[in-house]
Image (cartoon, rainbow, N blue to C red; front, side, top):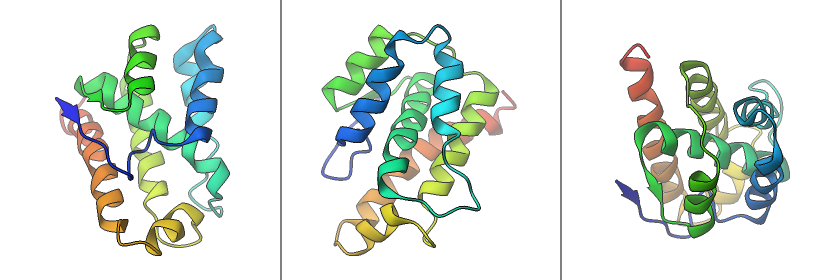
Length: 141
């Protein structure tokens, strides 16, 4: 399965690229992904510069689990270079990150998309990854 991207691709961000590039030398990649995604708090405001890396990391977890190939070249190459097991805890955490990112209140990322005609496309793009992660939860994995 390949996800076709447009302007709404979660990997089409310098911040996401930088955050994930920084994880390449991690001794424990799963722990590093978990820590990056832990930067979002469901009860706190979401600032644009703080959300893009965790969202991309969550989408990469979905890609790994569901064998999705992201259309963004650097993200596909990152997955090839960085094998990791998307265990149930990592998948659940990634799902929570995407739920938080799609939250409409007190969220600069959502506000950014709200001001464009692409908001529905962006939410649909996130939903593709959310569905892949929810399959894991439904399967009892």
